[in-house]
Amino acid sequence: MRKIGIIAVLSLLVVALAAVPALAARTTPTGNASFMEGPNCTETASGDVTCTGLITGLGSDDADVSLTTFGTASVDCTNPGGQLVEAQADTSPSTETQTNLQPENGRLAFSITADAPTTLAENPCPNGNWTATITDVEITSYQLTVTQNGTIVLDTGVVPI
Image: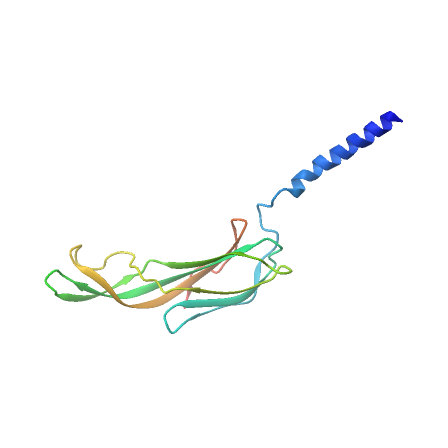
């Protein structure tokens, strides 16, 4: 009878050890994400970009939503003597990220706004002694990315606006 008890305990121990990997934290997404609605992205009156939508197939893991805006700036270049030359240049991208968003039943409604870019990718002025001043920024495109557990599950790519 004692042998049966020892065998039962050992069997239970083997089953418990086999279950440990299943209880470990996931490192890959649990669902098959897709946009059910949207994304609907528009430029606001202040030049920012707002995107809204509904994502399905996320499973239960938290998600991060990132919105990046790209633009072209009108620039005034002023030399040390006060001479003004107008130029145009690409801006550095501007990104906003919302983290740890919790899907409900695998669905996530989102609304995210990214500021218009405010820095230049490079100085468009004739030389480094000139001062570049941004006078206007035109948003040219955006990119919306959704990640879970460090893995991109949705990416719109760069989309013209």
